[in-house]
Length: 89
Image (cartoon, rainbow, N blue to C red; front, side):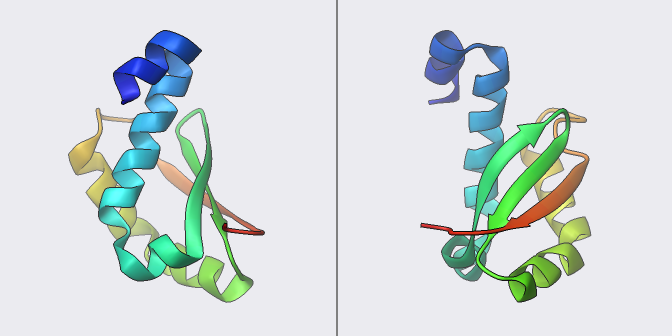
């Protein structure tokens, strides 16, 4: 899928799709229900969360999430995580 998106939307969109897919693979059931990737700004993954409590939980897990993403993605693809509270439908 990332290769198809890259052809249609360019390299940046393909990389973003690859990161979103990796986040889905490593996030676990709880975070999949309460968060979703919202964007990739340079090497910062922006994640939309359903509440400030979930944002806090995700930030506490930041190191673990970054390590898991690093094992699935090219080096330097995601180096930081930011959260944004909003609808996660």
